[in-house]
Image 1 (tube, rainbow, N blue to C red):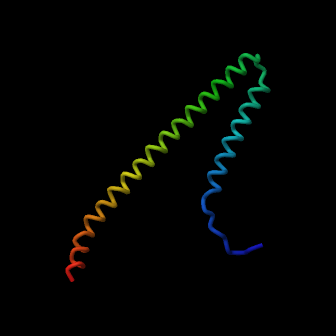
Image 2: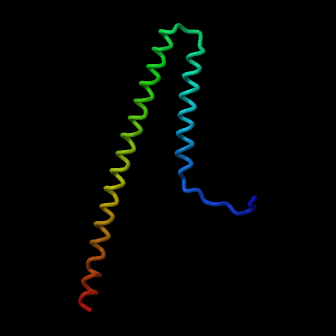
Image 3: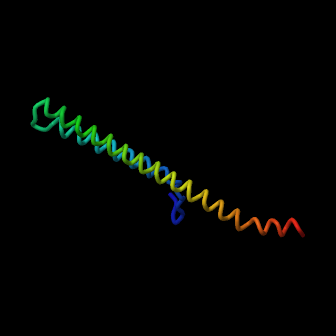
Length: 97
């Protein structure tokens, strides 16, 4: 056992934890619906609605992630261009000397 020394995590555990959380929520919701005192037709309808809602939510998250990624790429390209414009005069000075 180590005392006082903690290793830094690379952050991949967060994604795994969220994945297992979502799986657990889905299984719990499905089990709750299956054990609920409803008719089979109503349960299937509720499960289908929940499934469709989950797909819509995941689709929304995916679209938002794509937008944020594209924004980050655009900001990075703008920053690179700005940095290149600032460094160009310095490069010309160094070539002359």
